[in-house]
Image (cartoon, rainbow, N blue to C red; front, top):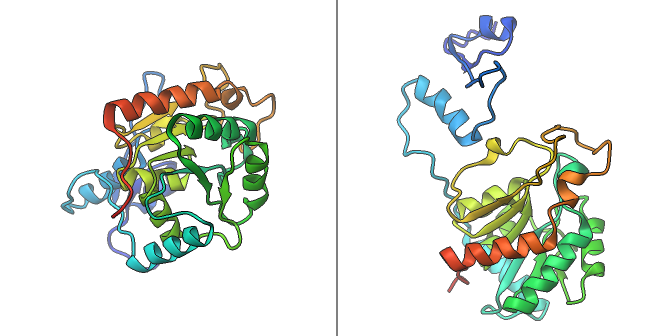
Length: 254
């Protein structure tokens, strides 16, 4: 009706297929169910079907100079020097509470990483996640810096991630930002099929519990949240040590 001559996408359902001029099908398992595969690859398949050239599936993220300066000023105001090592911690997830690792687990991991490596944990919550960030900080033995008043905007969040030695995260947007920046990331994955975000895994460790009910795709867990609670702080810290031994930490920007 809009007279758009080329309409490309995945043909799910009869109506959608009828509207598309270029129909793609998702990979299926042996039982005929769609397989979860990288969102990067998913969208590249659409553009490639239209004959658009690309540079591959590698992700990059540019950090504005102004955002770097703003984050530097913010951290200095909190008593942190430019050379102080940072572990950025992402405690929220827009999808729902089922994708969030428990606050006590985050706090224990921050304490262990500080004791092992001397990294100051910094939490940069998104809008609406301020109380959760403060809860994590209240449960930790060592001081955690919470940048919640005000929260960082996305360019500033990228600048904070960029200067991190390690990023500890739920399976959410800032994790992909950290991956695009080439940082070492340890991520706890719960109710969602991890294939959607499995890209550039060289500097990542993806932690999942072997429980029969995942992936359930529920925003709120209807039972005991075992897919996340069974990923212990010890497992995360061990994964971080293994990753850093193999790849080395992120570098503080000069």
